[in-house]
Length: 247
Image 1: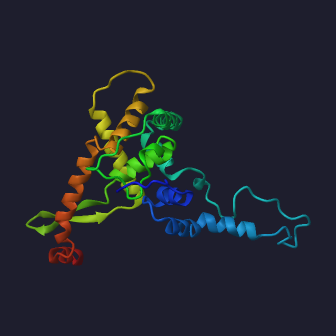
Image 2 (image 1 turned 180 degrees about the vertical axis):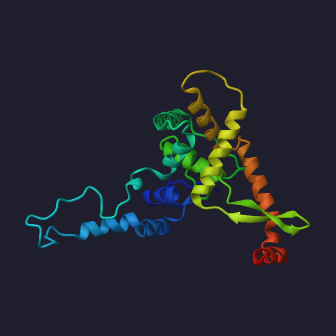
Image 3 (image 1 turned 90 degrees about the vertical axis):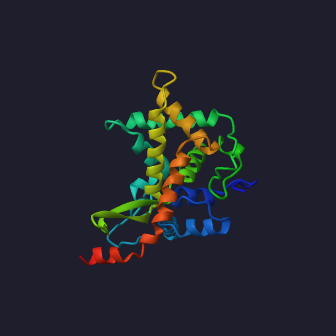
């Protein structure tokens, strides 16, 4: 089964947002403890109020963030990437408003109905938990349908001017980017039902719900990519590929 009765802990949610998978509780806590932000926060907590630099008479004021903290870490990794992909013509505020509308729609929507034919990420909480946390709702939908790999065509490596197909694994941000692009492509092909500023975010939210319930055609795209990547595994250790690299 792809769901658990207790829901996700804070460490599991943090690991899901950063890594794209839901590990066990002990492993998730270990991952969060090893993260750079956690180490910097612990380092700042260990510092006492003594003057570190003798040249300062009264000491330096405490910073709101730990030393070496990256300002981009203030933003949520999934929402920030989704907002950037929804942005058009450089209008970031419009994309942020659309993401907020999507989250409000998911928060007020009824609980989805899981489909056994299209399993979600292992460890996904029950359907009743998703509307309570729209960020988790969006992350589960994107990471469940995101492809694990892509097929790269190497020109001339197949012999006779034919390209050689080679499966290439994807990182977390690459997987999520491709999943969001697929969802947007499906939305653009569907006829519009209404007009107004809320039409586009409502269609995104409806497609996210369709992905979680297994009704979206994005699942078929993911299946085709994985099927093509499985067939291209025979080319990983191809002799023609080694010859192409030497050339």
